[in-house]
Amino acid sequence: MSAEVIGKVKSGVSHKLHDVKWDTGSKEVYVANQKVGKANSAAEAMRKAEAFLYNK
Image 1 (cartoon, rainbow, N blue to C red):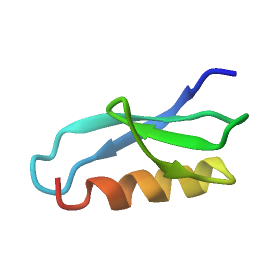
Image 2 (cartoon, rainbow, N blue to C red):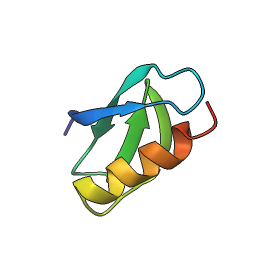
Image 3 (tube, rainbow, N blue to C red):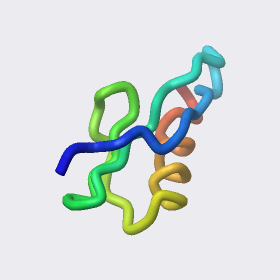
Image 4 (tube, rainbow, N blue to C red):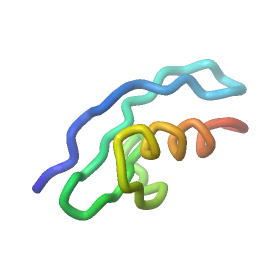
């Protein structure tokens, strides 16, 4: 199964918007085509993406 875009997140420093993708099969979360971890739900995936981009 491929990752689907579930939302957008703004980075904390540069204020650029990035797509957040989540693969429901493997539970992998991707931001700007970079793997940032695993999440059990779309909401958790968005929180991980926000945390990843906080200082970027």
